[in-house]
Each structure stands twice: as structure tokens, then as C-alpha cells.
Image (tube, rainbow, N blue to C red; front, side):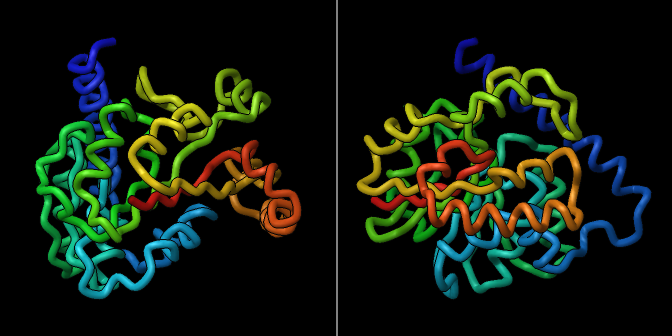
Length: 253
């Protein structure tokens, strides 16, 4: 699929998702209001990834592929000057409404991650969650490096694809939220090498080894125990991070 068709397919997919979310919200009272913990605790990697951004007061932060806008709101509440973009007009409408409902000021733009409408060095921090694996990193990597300040940091949370059993399960087993775009693929080592062509430092930390069972079982006592065991196991055997379900990437110029 060429770049134009890929972009249009991604846009249509996420506009459809946003439309479904809007229909679901119409059944709830105050659906856009939320506490930070709702976002920060919804997956085990989010809070540790946010910690990598450091003190955000007064910093210029780009929410890269903002989707529903919850991360952008949390960033703004922590004192950042937030710019958020997304390819999907539907998701941008939700994100704008969420920012207004939660009383924060965020600058929004509709844009493609491979061609950013921002000046060189415009941001001190870049945040993204489950977005890089949708993109051609040979085109996105230089853009990320271009708009990031020379002493800034970019933090992304991404699905990881180096576990063959997990790859088999992703392809063959049914589970909630499995719907995907035609071209998205979990990141692998070769994508890290592409990013290293644009950044001096690309560090990864794996999350959900045994506790990837949470994807099927939800949150319960068993999964909580597996998460605790994962933390211990991954600290003692860091090589196992390369067979986890998700990774947090921390990239510096």
C-alpha cells in the first residue's frame, strides 16, 4: 500500500472509531470529565512512561497522535504548554471537547505524523501512546528529531513484536479490542535501528510478560500478582524485556 492509501486507510479507521466512541458517550452523564488516574492507571506502562517526561511545568509538549485527548489533558494539568495533533478529525473533535470539559487550554492541529506542521526544535517533550507502530518510521523518525529541542526527550508506549508466541496469539486468538488497521505492526528491533539513525539514545523497557494475560482476563487478583512477579523478573533478567507485550521507548537527540 502506498503512502497516500495508507494515510487514508488509517484516517478512515480512526474516524470510524471516534464515531463509535461518540455514540457510546451519548449514553453517559458527563462522559468527558475524568481524573488523571483514569488515564495513568489504565495500563501498567503509562505511569512509568509519564515519569520519564520529568517536571513538565512550563515545558512545550507535543502529544503525538492524541486520539481521545486524555493524555493531552493530563499533560496540561501538570503545567505543560500542550500542542496535540491527530490524523483523525473525529478524534480531534473528541479531544477538543474533552479539553474544554476539563478546563484546560490545548492547541490542536490535524496532521500526519510523517509530515509535521511545526518548527524545528518547537518542543521540549514529545509523548505518544500506541502510534509509532502505525507509521513509516523512516519518514517519521526524522520529523520527530526535527521538532524536538536539542536537550528534549521523546517518550512512546508501543506494542512489541519480538515474542513469537504472542505474535501467534495476536494473529489467531480472539480478544477484546483486536480491531486493527491494515498496515499497523508491533515494533521490532529493526524499527529501533531506524529510530537510532535519528536519535543519539533510544532506550526501551518492557512491560507485561506473564501479566499480558490481562489483555484477555482483565484486571483481577491473579493478574495483579503476575504484574508484581513480572516487575521482579524483568529487573533480574532484563533480556526478557524483548519478549514483553509492550515497550516504553525513551529517545533523546
